[in-house]
Figure 1: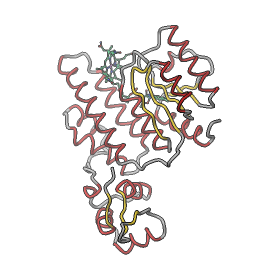
Figure 2: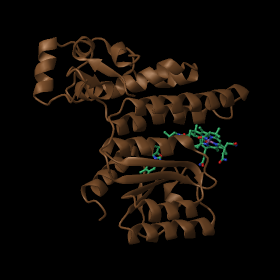
Figure 3: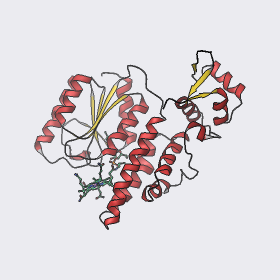
Figure 4: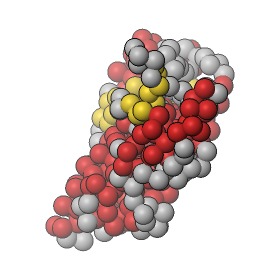
Length: 281
Ligand code: B12
């Protein structure tokens, strides 16, 4: 998102006076861009970052491009919006939780995961449950992409993370979630998505020199060949001073000695932060 706000728009959106906003920008609490005429402009992502870290509930979130959802914190609201096919509401709920200061990892491990576990449990009750599952997946993807669009950019030359799921694993959401959690930590994310041949990931480690590789495993790994390839990825990663972490529903099926495993986005975040603090270690 590249929308820029004037100081008066920012003041109106957040609910501060314009003079307070000028003081905050002068003091460096809010970073601004200057127009050719010297006027301050505040990127929307910066406005969102400022309200998020300071626990400010914006007075007029629409000015920030966010469709604020009053019942976002209700436990069932995301599930209900998905099952009812309410795409705008789903986007609004996830953006509101983010704006309210919730950790991205806890949004994913909380309402997002529980909604999909419930959707998965209703399968294969009837034809309608498959319709709802497919529609929910696309709405959820849109919610994640729109969340990405309001997150602050990472620094130039940021460390890289590669996120993927191996060949035969079609699940889109886990890879994208991993990418967003790592982006939030400060990584430049390369999301190769689901069904990625392991040799492509191995080559990417050598070519891209990431600090971290996150492999999501939803379908259990049963083939010895694939276990061997994950073992090779593990070796190539450590030769390149890169951490490989496997996670997801069936991470325990990856029988590779010494491999790092996680089962939640909170764990991924912790590992991503460790790898980030010690670049190329
Ligand atoms: C959406 C969905 C589908 C979609 C997938 C579309 C797509 N392209 O993504 C479709 C409709 C295609 C599908 C098909 C099938 N599915 Co399906 N599906 C699901 C569902 C409902 C959601 C999956 C999802 O995206 N979850 C969302 C995220 C939030 O959850 P998550 O992946 O677990 O991730 C969390 C953690 O695991 C962790 N995590 C994830 N990745 C990583 C990575 C790292 C590094 C770390 C640290 C952590 C981590 O953090 C996340 C947040 O907490 C699940 C239900 C469920 N319980 O997950 C069933 C589910 C996975 N499917 C299942 C089944 C059986 C099938 C089918 C076999 C059904 C059929 N008979 O056709 C097929 C197989 C398809 C195939 N080719 O393999 C079963 C799997 C059972 C098993 N034990 O393996 C499940 C669990 C449903 C169930 N309860 O039975 N499915």
